[in-house]
Image 1 (tube, rainbow, N blue to C red):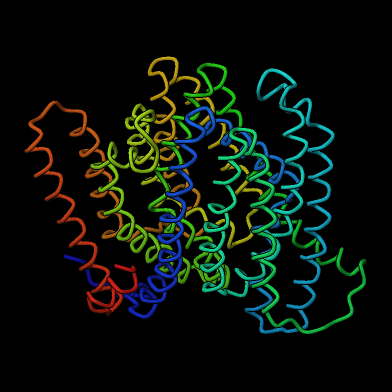
Image 2 (image 1 turned 135 degrees about the vertical axis):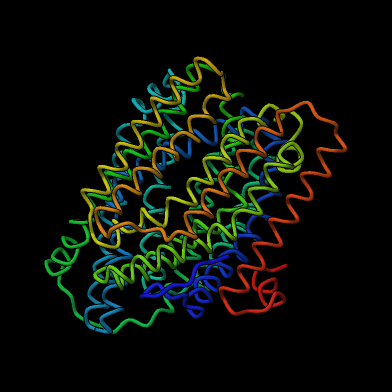
Length: 502
């Protein structure tokens, strides 16, 4: 039975409904994107195999690393700056911020493109052990510039909370990625990966521009030196965020390099498949946090009671939405691997299950982590991300020695145990103890459930009992989540199901 609140934490049905609305909007788009992406993933698995999946993952890690470095954290600080200007209802300030942001991303993207071009040979040597991949890496520098400009457009949409447009961009991006990639893979095979990444970046830029141009911005004259003043404010927070993003991207890149040195490109592809699948169904919950929760939290960042309330509400809604999906994925992991990929990826099943435990930790910890960004604590954010990145790299290196490729999944789970504890400590210092007792009980119960399902999947039990028991658990969890969502949002079950696209 849920406890009665007596202070500013009184359950706010309208607030819960707002969170559910924005999350379900992103979720609906994500669900459609997943269905479209399944087609692309299946073709990648069939046409390119584990080697192609591994190579594509390495290319993506390289571009992510360089983009993070050259982006200077603008993808987060830009949203915060735009959201603050919108919150102040100052058209002049909004126009200055948007215009300065657009100019800045061109500069940072150009710098990133140049860095990638000049460093293509060293990057190839460090990543693959030889220089034969230098030309593909050089060509991918185009993606750096295009992605930077696209990120700037997304900041404008996110800062002005145009959630519907962002949802449409997500669906269109998935469709473009599938329609572009499949012919590239079919015609050129593995060599088509770089071509597809460049063409997809172009399509994403066009799509983001189409929607961002609809945002009404007051026409103003703004000299470049004035833009630099605006940019300096963004970069003051952005550099801390960039540093945090850079260590995360660098750690992810180093982990792939470690796996490539320890195993083959095929096994890197197996890990890549499991890692991506672990978050694909609950990705809409995580995406909604950055898209809607972060700007809302920024708007009330100076009101500690409001921040606590929003963290509790976001944690509850996120868990209620994610838990049934995590349970389903834990139960049906072998089937999901076959649907999304192929039988050659069967060894990804245990890695996937360990990664699912990590994703649960991600859902729990992210509402806490956004408090630092909302309060503009860039240095603190960098420090926590740096600590987490070091922990992850060391854990992967240690666990794969004893557990093989499964050790990489175990390390991912361990990362989010560490990160959740760290976030609880940090937010306690910033805003006091955050979780209400019923939220803490829910977090503990969800964790015990997913861990229990993980170990049940490893037992040699009667197959009929296994399916009857697990299906019953899934139905109970789904029913509980729907019931709680209905009570907290004040919406009927039919309305809840409609919002979730069921």
